[in-house]
Image (cartoon, rainbow, N blue to C red):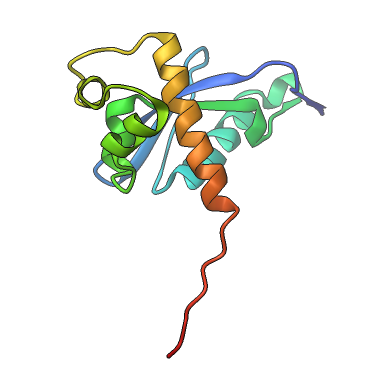
Length: 134
């Protein structure tokens, strides 16, 4: 088996009532999952079945999951859009319009938002919480 390492397969993610669904953009592959993590594993498994006769084996790093801002903020309600906007130097009203689907962000704005989300994620992953018992 050869591992696909150079190219990423894009998969569009959509929020459903029971979790998430994803479909590969350039291949007839579709799957679901209760969480993003499960969905990621399931799309890789489905793509591996699709490519089985070609002798190609994929890993999670070979798949790029894409979700629109509106669905992202609906699912990750813990992320405050106003705080994020202030953090990345964006007008909070503009980000709110992106989140509500009233406006579509440019690629540059999308990258700015994504970089801000990634930065917050990195900061959170470096923390340890302690409980102070009185």
